[in-house]
Each structure stands twice: as C-alpha cells, then as structure tokens.
Length: 424
Image 1 (cartoon, rainbow, N blue to C red):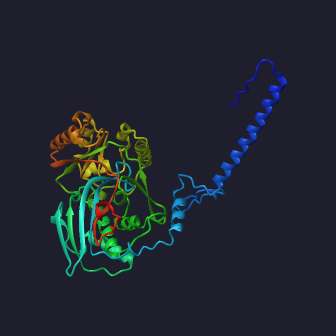
Image 2: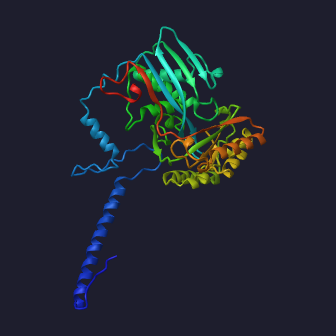
Image 3: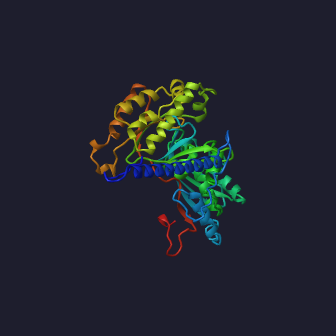
C-alpha cells in the first residue's frame, strides 16, 4: 500500500503524476519478483517419486554465506582444513567405555520414523584381550547371548569391517540399565554402542555431514532410524530414507518436559508386536496419521505442549497392539492424561507406556511438587495398571539432548593442555 502525503497547495496534476509513477515502479518490481521466484522454482524443481537429489544453492557473487547455508559452511571448512591430518585421532585404542541412552520410538503416529532420547544410560566397556569374553550385568542380563550374536559384538564387527581391519580378540563388560525388550531401545543402544566402540578401538573415523555414515551403518542393522538416530544424536530425531541413504533432522525439544514411563514386568518382543499389524491400511487411517504427525511436529516446534495430546494419537499400530497384546495400553493412557499428563503413548513396540509432563525446572527435588504433575501421573498409571492386572513399575526421567558418547579411552584423546569432557 502506497500513501501519498500532500498539502492543500499541491496542484492536483502533480499528485496524479506521482501516483502513476509509483504505480509503474511498483508493477515493474512485482513483475521482477515473480520472474525471480518462478525461475527459482524451475531451478529447484523436485521430480516425482522418491529420488535422492541435491539442491545446489546459487552462486553468490559477493561470497556471502548466509546463516542457513550449513552445507556451504561445511564445504568451506573441509577445503580450508584439507591439510589437517587425522593420524593422531585415528590411532587404534586398547580400551574404550561408551555410554548410550535409552530411546522412545514412534511418539504415537511417527511409526518407524520418530524417536526421542531419554536420560537412562547403558554402559559398555570393550578392550583388547587374549581371550574372548562377555560379562553382562543389569537389565535382561539373564537373557543376553554371551557369544558373537550379542548385538554389541555385531556392532563392533560392523565397525571393523567398515574400517577395513581384522577384528581382534576382545573382552566385553556390558552394564545394561535400559530395560530389556520393553520398548525403550535396548537393542538399538547395543548396536550403537558396539559401532561407536568398534570405530574407536579400530582407530577409524567416518563422515557425518552429507552422508551420516554412522547413522546409516546403525539403521542398516536395525532396519529403521527411529531408535538409532536419537541414540546417536540425542533429542528428538525425525528420519527418512531418500532412496539411497538414511537421513535425519533434529526436531525442537520443548523445555521442562519429563517422561513418566510405566514399565510392565512382562517383556514385549518386537516381532510379536509387529506381527499383529496389518500389511495394508485404509485411506482414512493414512489421513488420520498424516494429520497427527504434522500436528505433533508443529506442537514440538512451537513449544505448544498442550497440543501434544492430539499429536501422539495414532491409527496404524497402537489400537491394533492394544487389542491383541497390550490390554493395559489404552486404560493407562487415559489415566495419565486425566491426571494431568500432556500426552501419553505406547513407547516403541511396547509394552512400556510413556507419559509426557511439563513444568520441570532445574533440579526437580528442589522444586515445589505442586508445580509439576509427574508424581500424580505416575500414581494414576500404577492404579490403572493394577485394575488391568498388569504388574510393573514407574520410572521418571526426562528427554536428553545428546546421544552416545565415549566416557573413557586408552590411550586417551586428551593430550597436554587440550582436554576433552571427562579427560577422555
């Protein structure tokens, strides 16, 4: 809108000339913008079907790199650092300790595509030895294989294969703090932990930007990225397959969230939970889930926690699993929401039911209880479980922004005055 200010002494023909001139200039400008945008759409046209494509940004004559051009920044960094040697970092290690978080997959409608890292950690110590040995402690240790079929070993073997090196004799000490076969990503943690430990011991690094090789190694073993992505990167991760590789993006994690997990005593095999799902879905089910996934991502992106309740609703797997194998699911979800939870859903393939609450600030044990609802939600979930004759316990934790990390290594990565976290 153009407003022309004039006084009463200005001749009318002057106002007319100015108005026509501004209108002409505005028309030319808008025509230019339309041409530029149309040209940009033609240049960045995305072909139909699932294809792997790269959108190459237009050359900038001033050489300016804008804040959103992360790939260009990384390409420039790689070019400027081309003379840096990785020999010091790539020396083989004798021992490594790796920690990997639990994860909660799907978040309702994001079947096989969305997952969240939790502040609950398994710890794996792997070292060179003259005798193969696996020592398991903690959750599910009674059912863990003590040979090369253990998923940690599987991950280590894949890492050495990627490094092009022969797998040495190793000793494994596995401390499992993630409940086994409960829908909290215990298998993904084992895979990711084995891969990270294997790469460190082998003295081998892989590209992250533009290829996410470590993610793809893990997803190829697991079959999908919903657990392995947050286990690697932390936070909430959204993963897709481009047609040639797996790719992930971090989704905003609103502050102050807590996760109230009802963990049944019974285990839930993923194969069983998937076996009850139909191989086909209706258009109505597809539309329902498309809308709920969009609603979920928008609620997270805008920190609109009150809208999470609708964002975690699902039509593809939760109703089917509730009817066939988890009769406790819907009653516990209802009880959690009625007690004040922002949302509740089946974690992964189950049987764990995950409730999300808000209001946490700093250390929760120094915060007034009435500012949060985690305890009330936990009690309501336990009461509903008792009515369903489902034994279990509640574990209260929170999402965590970072994923697997090296706790210790021999020889260390820290040298002289340059120290890494924990003096690794």
